Image (tube, rainbow over all chains, first blue to last red):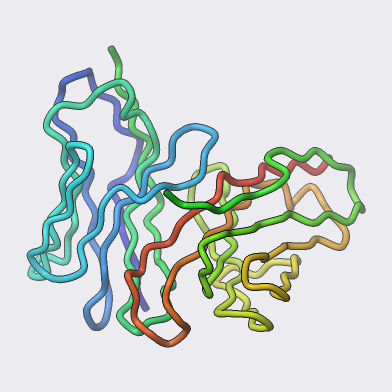
Length: 113
Length: 117
């Protein structure tokens, strides 16, 4: 079945540092790929998405490129701010139209001033 | 901007009580979902619906039940709450008709944090 793997453990970094969160997936067909963000005490918000190979999703300075050859969708931001502290989830949706999402386990990101 | 609402936001209740968590959306979405989020942050799909009178169990077995009598409303009920039900419950909806590909984006409500004593 479909699955998503995110790197283990929280990520702690200083303001203005470069952020990378790794995400790899296993899927049949041609899934859509997503990054969701969850701020403290809130639900999940869509951060960005890509629906086909080589697409790049981007939003709020974050980027991720759909790499079919490496089955990856790594999230990057060049210069993080304290307000980027949140939990980040990678997810995929199968291509069958039922819209079920498979989520990774999430990564807590803490940005220190 | 997503318009999906959950009430209550926080609920502390004693063992054995019956509870209903409310979820409503004003976007006219046919597809709706309930997730349980454990303290380690991982999300588990427990119920979903593709439209009125359609409900299915998700990937994680749950003692809760759901109903879908109206498009905009997808309540979750626990007949007899137990401490093991303590968790964060997230409701979501997405556009498109069942069986058809769509934008795939799911929109989430703010969640209900349930504590059973």
